Amino acid sequence: MLSVLQKVSRWLAGYTSIFIIAIAVFTFFVPVTFKWVSGVTQTVILGIIMLTMGLTLTTGDFKILARRPFDILIGACAQFVIMPGMAYLLVRVFRLEPALAVGILLVGCCPGGVSSNIMSFLCHGDVAFSVGMTCASTLLAPVMTPFLMKIVAGEIVAIDAVGMFLNILIVTIIPVAIGCFLNYNFSSRRSFPVVQSLMPGLSVICLALIVGGVISTVHDDLVARGVVMFFWTFGVVFLHNSSGYLLGWFAGRLAGFNTAKKRTVSIEVGMQNAGLATNLAANFFAAQPLAVLPCAISCVWHSISGTILAGLFLRWGQLKKSNKI
Image (cartoon, rainbow, N blue to C red; front, top):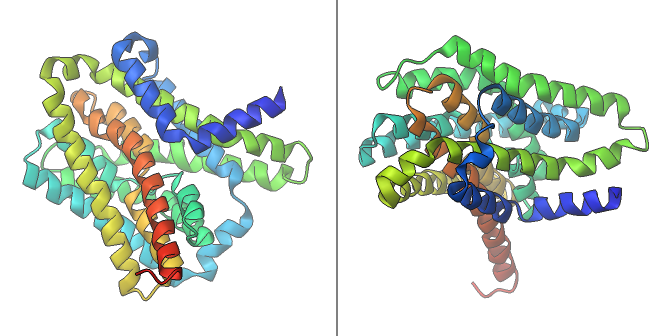
């Protein structure tokens, strides 16, 4: 039974995008399925995702923050300047309605996504640097996300900065800390690696539940307003995500990083913790339910685009080695 669960976990980790898209499509046609994923339940599910992240972190991962301060500083600055800045620009250019604008801005102000470390590994990036960037942006998120939302979204909607700070602390920092504590104290036990091997699959399932819950919430609005709103929002999400990849790569180039580091910065900047954005949208902007739509689209699209970009980076490296370009 255990070996079956491990295989399922590996499959879910390898086919995250397909699984999440399948859940999203299914929920659209049967929206009642995930109506229960809201409020406190959604917060708990996001906390489980962050707990799975903490269970994979070691003290060595945090030492990277001290050993490579310049790399982490460049990465953190790129993370919290490029994505909020691009979100603000796109909201202005596309003249998004307030609810959708809040969703895009939330995605831009959140820390890097959990799965970015996997993408860095797949494209032969600097995995240690990737983990360090994810740790740094997650630790900074309780302060930076509310602060940046005040700046970029304060004129659109009232921002409860203190409440947002506490919420992010509860659903990110505390679960990650618990996971790290468990890893530090029980990693030497024979059963612990087995538990860790099941975490990727659990994380994917939890993310799918959040996406399903969001689709259930916005289902009626999507049906009422048709596909135009969906594709208009997707276009903004696509441009926001793509600009993060591109400008992240250029930030690494300006910093003089090698190829592996440039790939890592690109992926770390472009892939956001859209699950956290979804939770914040649902808890703090419930009066504007459509705010969760850009977050849900980002949950799905960032996984797809990250996989595509990792493959392109690999292909590009192979072509360079073969002297074809």
